[in-house]
Image (tube, rainbow, N blue to C red; front, side, top):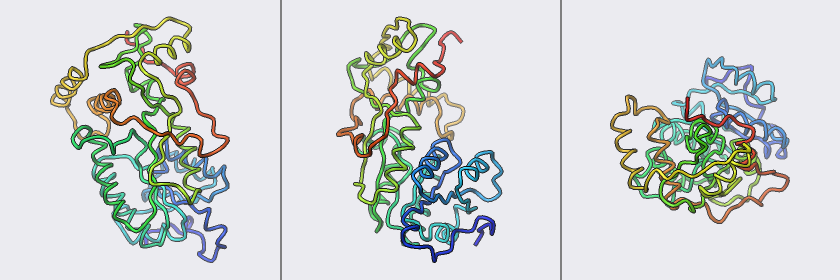
Length: 321
């Protein structure tokens, strides 16, 4: 069935208590997946990490060092995925990609979980509240909603974790805080609250949720909630220098910029081309996908990292470069 004998899943005669702690993790070699695996192991769970056959990435070695068992699978094979899911109490997906991954591969993973009798499934959402957005407002989130509709029809308990924007992006990929110009760029209303959560906080929360059999359909978290005014204060406090706001226009201006950037993009098959990040920012600034109410207090001993801390320890993008 394509399972490497060295990493074959545990004998199904394990005790029920042990099986309750068995979590199958897809997308385990990504940044978020590696962190989820780490926190699952810290909580005493057994992690069965699904990896593509023949993968020799450093992340595979890292997972093995963390104590995860590795199962090589072909994501196009329902039979292999079903065998890999056997005995698990929850399947957690941290897969990243476009339709082939988010809709098609996750659908096969979902079918495998159902076939294997797994009671719970956590999809690879980890985003703003796409349930409040109209179709067509964000390509990547449309794919998550499409899979969500399939998930809701499956005979399995599902929980999506929504965390806003990964606040780590403020130090690199999201050109909102510009250190060279000492500016925070925004469109629309500077008082619109925005949700931010670090990748690490999201991973730790996901690990806790994976081991919690009573989770609802959606869990909404935000390590920090700041408006553009709040981002300006956080950047000023983090750097010790005075930042100012720069309003680049209204949301209509940003929408026009997205349209032009997408039309001129050389490769729209990338998962996160520039216009996709702009779409995400437009969604957040509209206020439609604001996360509420927040479920931050569901699990004890989880310390939330503020945006100020992220900016103080990260490399803020320099607009002069």
